Length: 232
Image 1 (tube, rainbow, N blue to C red):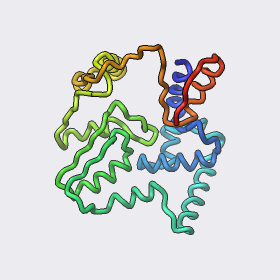
Image 2: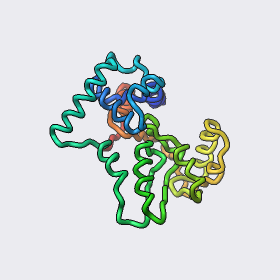
Image 3: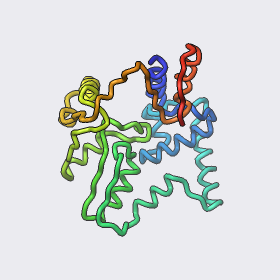
Image 4: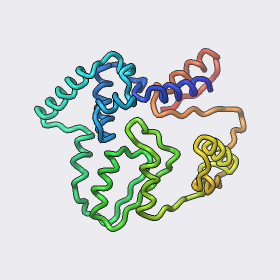
């Protein structure tokens, strides 16, 4: 639909615009978290063009660095840690396990991979599961090649059959992804073995991770006077 295309393009144009928080200082601290996940600095993100100053909503570098200093001082004074602190500390822990299994690794940031690599030094078997074509956290540094690049250190196993959809749906998905990314042996192995999933009554399903992403769809349906059900 027009609205879903707009939402997707808005996100691609500005991955730091969550659409949910317009406070510049909050966005600046969120950018700090993104830099930590990428194992880099806020200045590097800005200089590389990943977070151009034109997207920082008027927040200067000086303001960002001031907020970071105040944020770190607050955590120290209150004996608090945040999610990134926890990850940085966890990478050095030796887990009392011999097998390490991690799912959805296509969305791992470099920091999350650092944690897994730290844990993996002391286990006999590591299993990483994920779908390179479902990576959605690129803003935090997640990239399919971080997952695919580990093939040289182990054995790559592709589960080709999907029970989520039928072969017609799988064929369409293969065509779209191949057109965007080129031929890939993984794509050629995908087969839809589920039941016929084609809509039979002309209805549509709109699935989103947050309510704000559904707002445009809701407004269009209300303007058109179309009946709809909303869950969640």
